[in-house]
Image 1 (cartoon, rainbow, N blue to C red):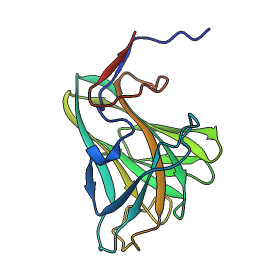
Image 2: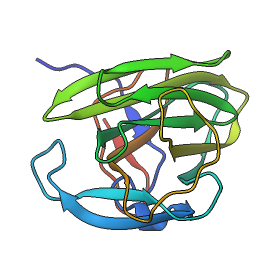
Image 3: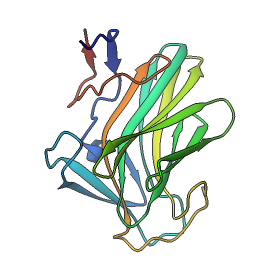
Image 4: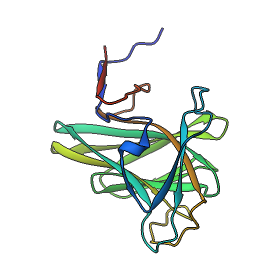
Length: 180
């Protein structure tokens, strides 16, 4: 019996990353099987620009605890870092490790077949929160780098919700969705 509180995924495109702001990444949609078994996971690859390489989405939430989560799988890169607001967490997609900066907690959950759910939680003062997934060439490195237009990671199932922990994934396609 699964009992969860009512939650809303505030990210309106949880699987369609073409609707996110893409910065110095090449997005290839529906490239491999996602954790749900369907071929809906996207690949983000770093371009050949010396800069950050990321996708981000801005959503609005009330004050209090807020949690951003997404599924990621290594491809040519085996780590990524993510932000919620100005707080950063690093994720090792090969060994299932996570490290954070101050003001945030994080966890990483093994979903099998190389997929991990990466989770960041912080206290927010409300308003807009930027949820961001960045590529990196080395775990805990947030440096700018030059990519090759093909190397990257797989991502799927982003969720931003009010609350101090991640609940089960709530898919969205154009509007926020509330699970009762």
